Every structure is written in C-alpha cells, then in structure tokens.
Image (cartoon, rainbow, N blue to C red):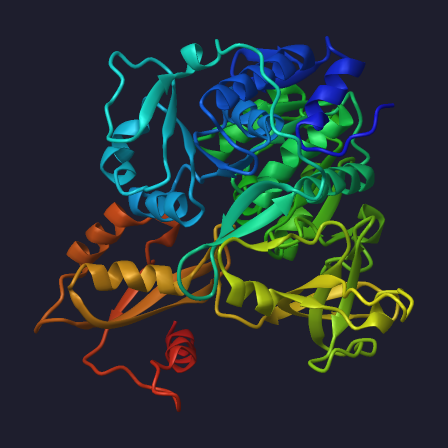
Length: 529
C-alpha cells in the first residue's frame, strides 16, 4: 500500500487503490474516489493558474457540499493552506479571519456572497474569489477578481508547489478565553497522523459509511473527512435543520459511524429512533465536552449493539484521548487514555508529573501537536512549550527541545491510567458544542452603545452544557433588552447570543487588579439561577 504523508494524498492514494469505490455523498449526488480525485486536481490547476504560492491561504465559506471538500484538498494539492470558515459566522467575524491570516483566495457560494460584499473590500491580501452555484453577473471589486466555479475548473493541468509533511496544511480558528479567535496552524503530518490514529481505534474500514453532521470548520468535523478518506470509506455530508433529519439520513444511507457533540446527542437521545438502525450503526462517538450520564444511558438503550466512544480533544492537537467501549460500564465519567501515537501527561505547575488522582494540567506530546497559533507569538508561547528532557524519553545529549501543547485543562489520572476531566483554567464558555470567547460577546455588546459596562460568562445548563449570561449597565437611564438582543442577533451567530441579560446600575464590581470581577459576578448569578 502506498504511504500517505500529505493531506491530499488521503484521497489520491485511495483513488489509485479503489477508483470505483464511493467516496462522498451529498444529497442525491455520490462521487467515486477517482471522480473526487479528479475534482481536487481541477481545483489545484485553477489555484496554480491564478498564482497561488506555496503556503498561501485559501478560505472556504461554504456549507457541507462536494465543492468544500474539493477546495480543501485541492488547496493542499496546489501547495497552499486551507482555512475552513464556520458557515454560521457573521460578516465582521469573516473579515477578521480573512485579514488575520492574509487570505489570498476565497471560495464561497452565490448565495453567501451578498453577505460579504462590503466585508471583502477591507481584506487587503484577498485577490481571487471563486463562486459556486449559479450567478448571472460576476461582482466587481477593486484589486479582487471573481471567477465562476465551473470556469475556474477549466484551467490547464499544472503541478502545485512542493510541500513536505511538516508544512502548514490548514488553519482552524478557535475562540480563545480573551479577544478574537486564534488560528491553530496544523501541518500535513498533524492531519495524516490524526487520521491514522482515529481510524485505528474506531476500526474504520472500506465498508464504513460515515455521517458528517459536525461543521467542517471544527477539528472534529474536519477529522470526519480525513479518517474517512484514509480508510477508503464513504462520507455523507449533511446540512440538517432538525435533529430528526440526522436519524432519517442514518436510516436512508445505512450509516455505520456518527460523531457529534453532547448537546446534539441530548437532542437525539430524546427522539424515537428507527427500529433497524442498530443493525448497521457500528459506533457512535461524542466529543467537545462531557456527555450526561442519562443521555449516554438512553443512547445505549436504543442502540444496544452499537459501540459508544467517549473522546476528548483540543484543536491544538486535533485529538487527545478516547475511552474504549469495553470500559464504559466501569468508568463512564472518564475521558480514557491517550489515542494511538500520542502521549498525554498530567503535570504540576513546576513541570513534574502528578501522582495518581492528583489534579494537574493535561499536556500532550507527539505528531499531532500543532505548529502554534497564526500570527500570535505571545499566545503560542503560553500554550506550546518545551518539555523537560526526562519527560520525553530522549537522551540528555539531544539538545533541541521537544514542544508539547499545554491544554489549560485540569485532569486527574487514576491508578489504572485512565483520565478524568476536572475543569478549565481559562474562562471559555462551552455552549451547544461551541467554544465561545466571553470577550467576543462583550465586544458586540459594547458596539451597540447601549451599555456602559458589561461582562459575559457561562452558567451550567443541562441541555447546552452552558448558556451565556451577560451582566450589563445602561449607557443611558434605561436599556431596552429586546433591542439589545436584536442587535446581538444581527452581529453574532445564534450560539453566541446571550440567553440571559442582567441589568445592573454601575459600576460593576472590580477585582484587585481593577478589572471587572467576572468570577464574582458569575458566582452571584449562579447562586440566583
């Protein structure tokens, strides 16, 4: 079997081995591996023809469709780096990402383009826009050239820039505890090693049919693509409106594997499942937070022959741990052990290893550790740090340090080596499977000019994991909460809109550093809720 070292080779290698096998289904359309490989090559030809240089960024602002996959893997074939954008993001957020990582080419749809026309003029490095779907007249921008997708694919065959497995393959944007989202830079090695590792413990094989229900801009969502293509199986792309649509697709397409986040599993567990689904659904997996025990029990009751996998990961290392199905009954609250080809350490602040059941920081080493954060030296230095030599298994004579990712999450390891999640060091809000920066919420609230001061934080919620709670003081005598929420819905994705807005007369309490005391306000709100 030909070795795979680069992202696009996940498709090309399988196409050489089984060209007629089904690779991708979207609605009524199914592409074979040879067809998908050809489409990726056409995208690469088009990108080379418009001058894409090695490592330049290609942003993809599409829902789940074949063009998304072809654009992502075609970018890799051309020698560039793809930047998947969450379809739920608003124009201001898209503008920030396009500017932050100096995107050169944008792939979007005729339906989405009108949302961005004013945004794109401020993106100084953007030179090409590729538009899928039917568009009567191409838009005109200063210094930006627009192309129809079908015409773009007609470029002559061309070889892309030479890349190796340590080169950048993609940038996935994830919210940080403060400020704007951070771009996590992942190499070809990160992505291919992740595909090999995950497909190994999930036992993916050519006869599998994987349902892509998560956004492809998520590490777990993008992983559905890489593991599927590595195994040579088929992926089904689904843009669902209701959770029931997922069940219908599982039944119709004979899905064998589904990965989702806990809030979605909670919704699915409350539905009546088709009676024969368990005959072909081989496994279900959960990532992006802790699955409630009653939800896990309900799913296992409905799917007694389907293997459950509980997983933990961080975008900075793509995947970290999983709990094997045979351990579910003994330790259902565990996040398991390190995935294959990775090592997970539990360290004290001084860098020494914790004793069994002693809380410490989860630190991951190995080929899945990302290259750092794009354009952010300070945050990269905080998260990606050298490991002491005695923790690496290297000889003292090796003078170059090994870089590991320090997660910021507190865990403990039991006597048998299984890990348990305790909490986060930072103040991230985890709601509906999304990581939300409280500062991003606060920036939008301030931008309305209706508030004088504000602070945002998460409160526990049995369905969503957390809900966003904001405390505000009025900029004038009164504040119209409905008008404030209306402004939020205009400038935020739905999952970022506060579920509760508490109005106080200012000023808000401060901590010893003179900052608004987020923890005290969150504690007070939690006591009253």
